[in-house]
Length: 225
Image (cartoon, rainbow, N blue to C red; front, side):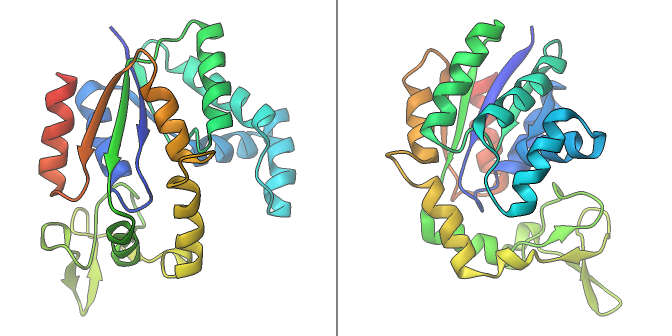
């Protein structure tokens, strides 16, 4: 039976890494909100064209455009099951998504939440490095278990040897704080969305994100099995 999961966690919590592990174990689709936008824009869909206008102006894409995009992508993964990562980001989006899922007859089975202190999350963001071949290859200069390896005098991906880079906004404290302000907001932000879905019928998996990658993985899989 297909399993559907909503994944939550602040930037720096390792949500993408854990999502990729869960995806591989259950052969489900790992759906990231940013990838949905890119797919529609690249494909030149009507929704993509509308979204592009907002993105180019630096504005948030309205829910009436975002939610149909998300639903369309989730519907394609109905048989395999999906793990949705990066959406919803607000209470309003949570309420709208919940309503839309029910109207579409799509069950939500699990809420996966990685809990992490804000300051630790910030430190993790500033030390992470992105692999040119796969963003889900974990590399971090401060953690021995996932530290990049050195080759020809420079650090490369510990998984595949690919070139590494740091996102500019990962080194921008103001940008990090802005993202975290949205996530940790329990009134209208992402934490409000988390609490909204926690009150629903889906099983809640809440794990301590300060543990090692393996410990977090084991805690999540123990609840999913």
